[in-house]
Image 1: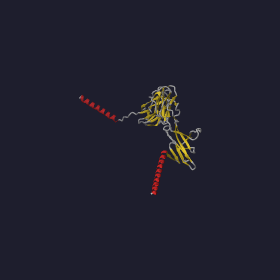
Image 2: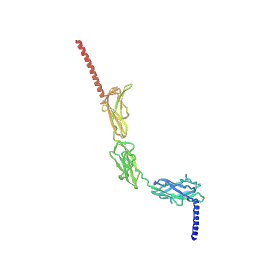
Image 3: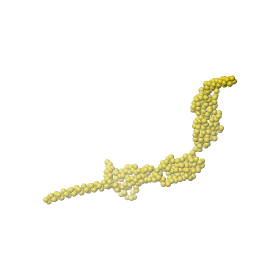
Image 4: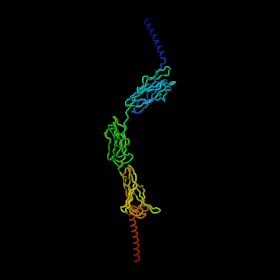
Length: 414
């Protein structure tokens, strides 16, 4: 009997428990609202003396909010606020003006949004910092930061705040002021193959590293060469070369300095002036043609000297700068020498000479080469060949005439 009553009570209690479970299952459970604040950029490396800007963003995570209170702490011994800016912020009304203290390392923003806002990346404000000393600078949201739900109750739903960490480094030292005592102008070619370099010594510099190559963007390897402020090189090949140097200051290798040198030790190519005679309406004229090549610095100019070889030795002759073709100033018959200097941009000189004889106003004898007749040049081998042909033809004609005469004499005798 007692056992039956126990079963009845247990059954009723179980039914009540089942009804409660069903009841609570049918009641909707609301998920806790949340929002987050974050910095962008959250990391970075900046040199001492430079500035950088960090922006504060809100992610309301699908909720509508109407108040944002962002309080931040930063490292005042590493960075300083130059100015907080709010121009592009979604905040429509600042409850208290943005404020900061470079002594305490604090920044504060408190703003409201009329009608509320739902955003995943809403800009609260931006802050520009100036770096003042090397090390790690942190920017952190304080526990006083809030994001209030637009629910009429001012519910704080800020659950996450992502801070920032920034590496402040000493700027690389500038390269030393370097110059060449042998090749003073980097845009000019020199025939000196032994360049030398000097550079100014700065306080605090302990080492120098340099290299000399044909790469305009070369960088020294950072291995110390010496602590001197002079170096030189010998027997450098022709071409454009670059001297690169870095200096070590406060244990840091600085930026490279570069100096270019242009070397050309080779004279222009071998050349021989060409002489041509032309007829004119009145008289004739003799012209000298010349051209040389230079592989590196290029031809700068030509100088010409015409020597009358029949004139007394006491008569002076001079080189004057000329261009090709050059008109020979002499027209009388005689023997002459034309000497041409080709001078490249490094000052290297190559001379070419041609000797010729003006036989008649229309015929010039080019020494060692041939005859120039009315602009037609006949080399000696062609003249000899034509002479031989002429002599052979004359011999044939004489032989034929002699045979005819002999036959006629024989016929008359018979």
